[in-house]
Amino acid sequence: MAQHSLAPPRLCPDCNGFPVVAIDTGTLLDNGTRAILLVACHLCRGTGSTITATPAPVVQREHA
Image 1 (cartoon, rainbow, N blue to C red):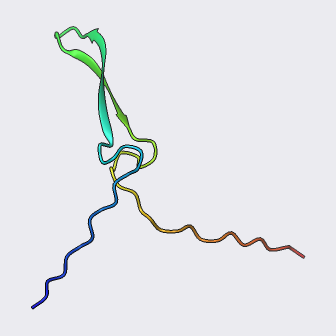
Image 2: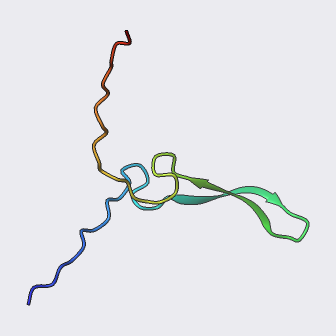
Image 3: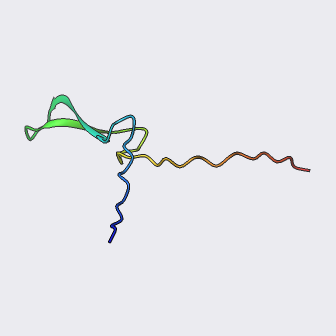
C-alpha cells in the first residue's frame, strides 16, 4: 500500500531556515550574564519557511 508523504517545507531564501539569531552586545548585566539581542528574519518573520502562493491579481474598477 502506498504511503503519502508531505512535501518538505520551503526554507526562507533569506535566512535559509535559521530565522532567529542571538547577537552578543558585549555588555555585562548586574547578574554577570551578557546582554543579547534576538533578531528575527525580516522576510519570514521568524518562522524559517515561506509560503509560495502567488498573490491575487489587482483589479482596478472605475467608480461611477
